[in-house]
Length: 64
Image (cartoon, one colour):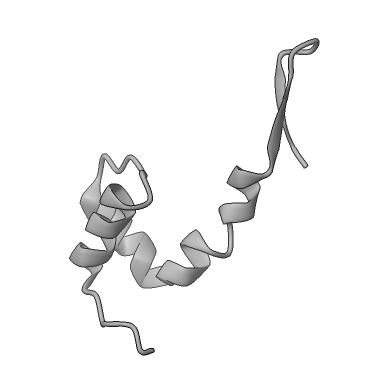
């Protein structure tokens, strides 16, 4: 199934509404999307944020 084309503005809205990202500067976010594809931004780095462990003894959050 083909995915619909999304403008940069629509991609930013999707990042905010569906992915839960906090974006304070939409213009900066658009410039980032122009340099880095949406897929690379979300799919390429998502594992860094989904595989983390909090160690209560040290108080640190570790990425595993």
